[in-house]
Structures are given as C-alpha cells and as structure tokens.
Length: 197
Image (cartoon, rainbow, N blue to C red; front, side, top):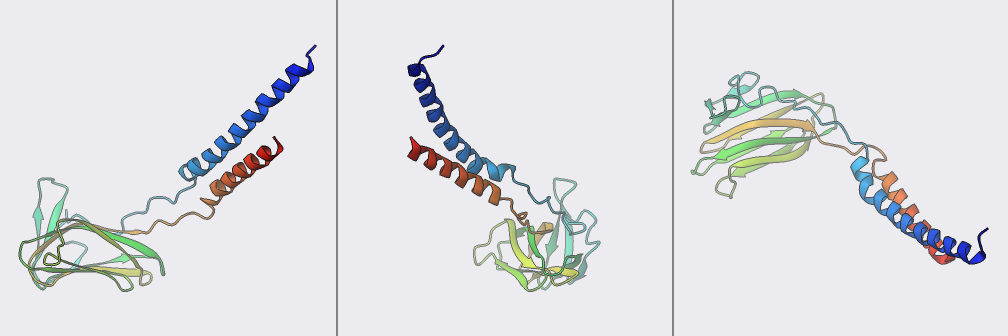
C-alpha cells in the first residue's frame, strides 16, 4: 500500500521528465530530421570522355587543341590555343537546371576562357581578372532535349579537364516539412505542459 505522499512525488518526477522529453523530441526532430530526410539520387555526369582519356573523341573541335597527359594515366588535359573552340552536345531534359563544373588552368599571359551551356548559361574567366587554376562551376537551364557545352579560348592558352554536367540537385517534396512540423509540435507540447504545471 502506497501513501499519498509517495504518489505525489511520483507524479512530479514524470512531469519533469515529460518536459525534458518534449524538449529532447523537438531538438531531435529539428536537427536530425534533415539528416534522415529523403534525398535525390546523385546525378550522372552527362559529358562523354570528360578527362580526355580518348583525346578529343566525342567533341567538335575548331582551331588548335592538343591533349596532354598528366602524372595520372587516367587524367588528361585539353590545351586550348587562341581562337580554339571545343564543344559537346549532351542529352538533357527540357527546362531543367544543370550544374556545369570543370577544371581550368591558366597560362601567365593574358587570356580569356569562355564557357557556355544550354539556354544562355555562361561563365567568363580571365587571368587578367584574377582567375586562378582550380575547379569552377555554374548553373544553367537546358536548351531542350539536348544542350551544348562549349569552351572557347579568346587569347593566351588554357588547360581544361574534368568536364561535368549534371542535373542540379532538387529537394524532394516534403523532405524538410516533417522535421519542421515535428519540432513545432514538440515545442507546443512543452509550452502546454509548462502551463499546466
């Protein structure tokens, strides 16, 4: 047989525990929700021969372009001379956002590298404007069922490789809503229980 004093003490502990559990639930829902939310699958690179292992096969070339080996036998550089143009047409979905990325290296002379893709997406790099060797990227809409990726050299000599065109990641419908609603519900429960105590 338990007395009333013991019961009241038992009621206080669960109430305090309930407040802590509400806060913990809210924090877990807010911070862990995005981690466990469904994600879009990683997109595939649409560029064929992106590191020029097969020379310029798969590309349309105008002007002087040579392919140079590197220390890595699976990675080559395309060297674009003044006035050179290299393009590749890739299959795309109409009205879809794509991310274009690539490696570019610049010679010390003044040079200008123009990159374009799809429906007006473009990027212009220049060593005179401070462009340095590295990975660059930009986003652009496709121009239809197929889109052209192009690099043109406006002066000097540039090296390019690791060309990549992928559909831009899109959040899945409702991927963040559940964690947001769960967090709000936890905080609301905390507020209701706090008022009752």
